[in-house]
Amino acid sequence: MLPLKSERLAMGLLVIQPSPFCNINCDYCYLPNRTDTRRMDHAVLEKVMDKVWESGLADSRFTLLWHAGEPLAVPRSWYEIAFEIINRHPKAKDSIVHSVQTNGTLLNDDWCEFILRHKVEVGISLDGPQAIHDHHRKTRKGEGSFDKAIKGLKTLQRNNVNFGVVSVISDISVDHPDEIYDFYREHDITGIGFNIEEVEGANVHSSLEKLDGTDRIRTFLERFYLRNKADGFPIRVREFDNAERNIVEPGWCHSPKGDYYNLETDPFGMINVDCFGNFSSFSPELLGQPTEKYGSFNFGNLVSGSIFDATSNESFRSVLSDIEAGNKKCAATCEYYKYCGGASPSNKYYENGTFDSAQTKQCLSTVQMPIQIVLADLENRLGITDGVSPIFEKSGPGPR
Image (cartoon, rainbow, N blue to C red):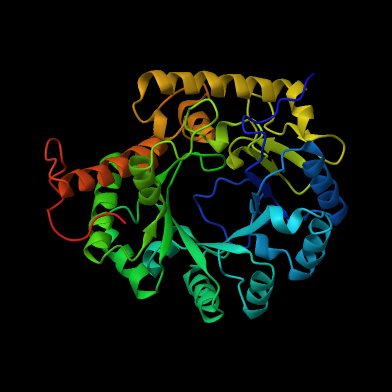
């Protein structure tokens, strides 16, 4: 079997799970096995990195994301050895951007020193004010995690560590854009991303299913955008930034074939590795998930094999075939395809039951709605009034 390399002959994201364990118990989490305290052996990490470099997919700069559990529940001493192993490769320091996604509850000054020394990018999960955050993000004792999370955020700020915030929009937050916006401003949070609570993995039901979620999400996004605009856009919002770039800079993220480049639909554009060396590709949310339709989403093991062993894996080939078929449906039926390249395969699978499908609630909320909101504002500022949303007035600053 000939190696099936990614379209760009490069891996853009390597997700490594140091442990599946998480010290809190968010009820909307998609990850299984969150009580499993086993961690990746350093010999496994060494094999994983050897196989990554040997694959030829790491020839350009890529992000190594420590995720898929609470990464800071693994001690710093483990990471000191892990980073030493990774940095043995002569290209490592120039090729790798380290990133960590954390719930923030374990952050302290020592972690900040490590983060600064190794230039690790930080994302912290925080859903908003305490009543909103604690509704879904609880400890294993059923207590809220807000106090520890906000303490972690203040620790980052005190140590001058740059960070972004990821907030999940759920039933408890979707009707409170003003409170959430004010919370961000009060705590000097300047970069955020909104994850809409999804049916995915272990989270078999979304709290938004009980509501008229789509319209409420649109109202939330419109109101948040207006509040941010009125203040001169002090907060960078991932979804609006992506929308604006797609509008004003067409072609910025296109593949060699001319289509929008979607890392999640590129066979080896994204590699996701669990603590035992098992790996998947495509969406990181697929890692370790059981499935009847496709068999295991683990496509091989990097201790005993190579990345390209996946090309002879029946499950991998079936997933890839259906992802490509689904993308063709998107291209044929959706005018937004050129701005997302088929959206997220994991959302297609968990929302629609198959990768061979098109529109999802996730792409409506994170691709289509932000583009519509930003485009309406741009058109309004330019005096193009046909079809412009009435929420905008011809005043105040526009997009950056």
